[in-house]
Structure formats: C-alpha cells, structure tokens
Image 1: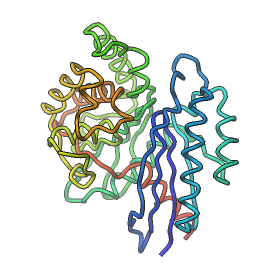
Image 2: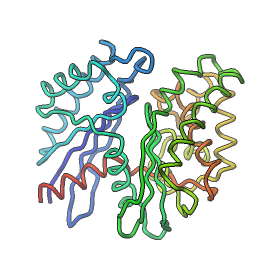
Image 3: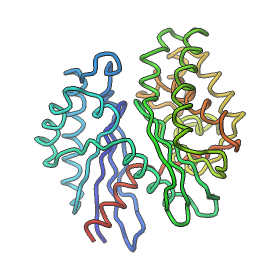
Image 4: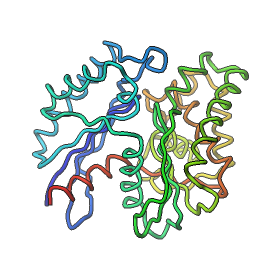
Length: 312
C-alpha cells in the first residue's frame, strides 16, 4: 500500500485528495475542498489580489499539516486556469513552495483535460460507459473537453476554453437575480467559446457524457432533491437535459439568499452556481445525447493515478 496526496488549485477552490493505491485501485482516505476564490477579479485585472493569495496560502498551510499527519509518500499540486492567467503567478508559486515544500505546477489546459479524463473513466463503472466518451470539467475560470475511449483510455481530441462559473458570473451576471439581458450576454459568450471548442473536439458521435466539478455535481444533487450534499448519491447519477434546463432556469431566477437556502448548496458556490449551470446547459444543447453522468472522480484522482505510476 502506498499513500499519495493531490492538490488542485483552481479559480474558485483548492481541493485535496489523500488516497491509497493498492493493485492499481484508488481508495480514498480524505477528500475536501476550501473555497478561496483565488481568481477573484482576475478576468478584469489579470492579477491575483493580496486577499485571494492570503486565503489560498492559509488553505495550503492546513493541507500541508494534514499531508504530514497522513504520512504520504508523494505529493503533487497543480494550479489551473487562474494561475495560467495571472501576471503575478510567481508570488503564488513562491508562497505555496514556502508552505508546502513543493512547487505547484501551473499546468496547461490540455494536461488538465488529460488528468480529468484519466480520473473520471477509472472512477466510473465500466458498465455505464459507452465510447466515444466526452468528459467536460466545468471549472471556475476554464472548461475542458476530452473525447476518448473508456476501455483503452486513448484520447482522440481535447481542448480547454476560458469559460467557467466564476468568469461568467464576474463578467456578466451582476444583478441579484441576473437580468434577462445579462443572461443573454452570458449565453452569447459561452456559445462563441463552444463554437471554437467543437471545431477542435468532435462531439457528433459521443455516446456518453461525463460532467465534472461542482457546477455539475450540484445540479445532480438538486435534480435528486437531496436533503444534503451526498457524494455517494451524486456519483454516477444521470441527469437529463430537461432537468438541466429546469434547474438552470430556476437558479437564474433565484436570489443569492434563495440559492444559499438550498440544502445541497456549498457556501462557496452560492454566487456562481447559476453561471456554471448555464455553461452545462449550453453544452448539452449541442450534444447528440440527452443525459450527463455526474462524477465525483476527476482531476484529483487522475493526479493520484499518475503519481502512483511514476513512483512505482
């Protein structure tokens, strides 16, 4: 048995997975998320704010203590959309290194997509996967698309676009609830980006669509009307396109206070969930299939699998 730790620092949250890998199978020891909003305002300013950096460094310090306590053999931290965009990313990199003892890797969108694909297909029952599989990771600042074969793990195409729940909310969805004009502007921005994405990634023959990250899993939780967020109930749940349409419309029509009152809603997702659901809705309107399979296995799992293969 060998224990590994993976950290994913995105635009909205920083997440930790500690897991054992036994005979090539991942067993979760700890998985958690802290909302730090590292990418707050970056779409406008192009830089991390001092407050965002301080929130992130505090979370890194907490994770460093836990990693030491768990006695992991190897740790890898990746930083994604916000770190790719920030002019002052070196301040973030230096601060993490001082606290964690390793340097965070600012990975390109294509590697983020590849790791997400690896984590998702190995975390979903093979009986649910019919290839070609499309995996989409709807993050805070970017969304990744990967098409590949679930059985072989071979990726045929992938891309990353600068569309995400935080970016869309900060750019367009300013009112509470957002106005019809703000929603229309958001849809136009998303659709322009999808036009570009689906030139690079052919989705016409996709048989399975797997959605990753909090926007998708929260929509899946709302579709089931769960009394609380339940990762086991969400993982592998099929959400229909009509449910996505209905839930997106409802979220867009709610105030922040009304969204916060939903029992499945994470506090760090209250103000951005409508934007994330809108991205999911626009994606599904272009697909030849009418369901999205929600997955709790994602980029973090892919990092652990990749780490275990490198260390073995």
